[in-house]
Image 1 (cartoon, one colour):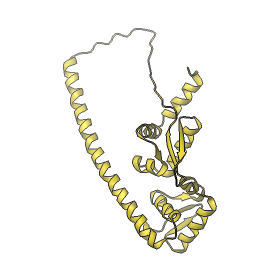
Image 2: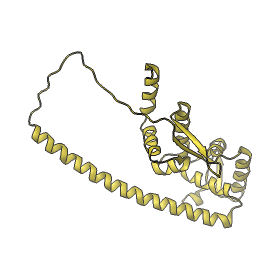
Image 3: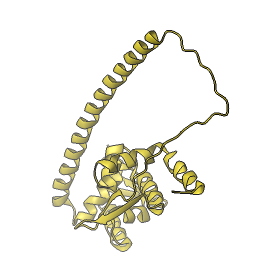
Image 4: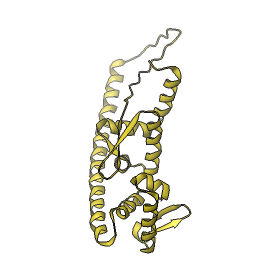
Length: 205
């Protein structure tokens, strides 16, 4: 039985819609950062922040694959039951239950139809994203020097990131990331703006 402080902390965590979406995704299967980012259409930076918070609360944990990437999974799932207890019994008169039921069923049907359409669109979009990543890997093997450079470009295609964020995202040493970024800058594929790196305009289009 968890105490009130823990309950409040868990409710704070679940109060964020994207964290709830991440938990729901991890209920299906373990995922690594870029996979969560692609599936939920969130920036890798935001995904990392959510994962780190839930990891500290021991909701999530991870294991490393052969490429030293972190696969996150639910260490402890959450089942929340909320009950509203009233001091007084409130008498509510519901009129025309049959009409309200039909209206609710009609709205539900429309929502389900919309969800199916969105799910199909998202499925097709994910296929297109996967195909683009495969093409980048294929072309990159001829143009670039190593897999780290390819992974860096794929990450920067999602959003602008700093060296530290890229190092955490790729599970790669900071020095190796810095060297690869310098090489990509010399090839005029990426550029630096302050602490952030991004794709050059000609490659981002």
